[in-house]
Length: 378
Image (cartoon, rainbow, N blue to C red; front, side, top):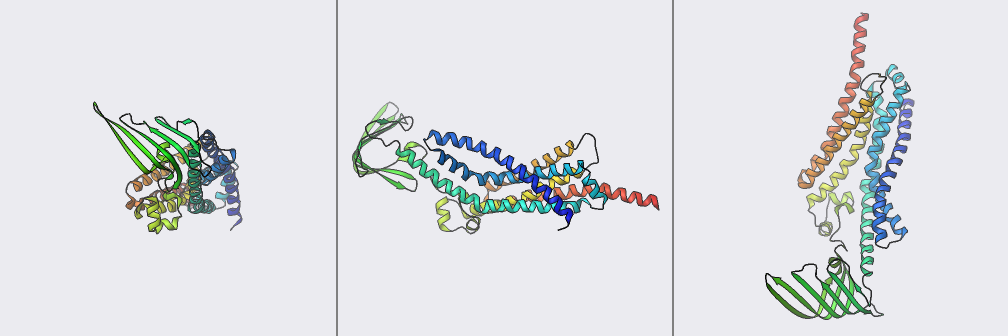
């Protein structure tokens, strides 16, 4: 790599490190505050809070890196222009297309980092976070299984356990579910066991009775059912606990491109939806070099002004917003119809065309001035 390319690349990488650190810190702290409140309200320790915030970090970094690349190239190009280094490079015969080469290399480097994150680290972190959330939810459920006192897990629910045996059996259990005033149910059992299911903890009631009071207009109907064994979903009782199925974002990209029966059964998704998620990940890193080139090429347009380059910066931000708007629109369209996954690559194509047009506009005035000078000399 020529020395001039190494110089520009080093400038961009240094600024990129600074902006990435600042933006990641801001996003991460903002996300950590909400997690901190939720987990501490559930009685979790500081170590659990730290673990959860660390598991959200890969996702935050993958979102922030393209923005940091844009900020680094825009600020770096502005500094090169203010210190007349950019003018010296152009006077030496380097066209905007030639100057964009190290910026493109820088954008591809950021894209590689984003690809590692979205294809490997983010799915691993999401899967681990989901598992830990399920474990924490079960621990929260266990907090309501206290003997000798009435517990109120949520509005309209009452739970009472006389005692807990040494082997874990719940003795003389009472549950009143009055969340629906027109359909109230009372369960009572001599014993109960807590078992773990795919959807969360489940109570197995043994030797008991269920009383259901249903209101139908002015008519009240009371039905009584005796049972030897009855399962009761504690997760449904508490209104949140457990996972109803895994998320597509918890799996690796290769498995999503070639979804098997186990993945489809665990997520409840279709093969088209799995492949759409995979293509969305593949398209995401492509926006990093686009963002870097937009920040560079836009600031090359226009000549020197004592008022600075604030107009070019505004245009660069607007261009980045347009590309991001197209990205969101494409993701929304593909989310509605998974068969339209090719539209996920449209924002990258539009962004590449926009960068090419900006570089062409930056090079065009220089070429016209050169032709005018040649005509005057002849």
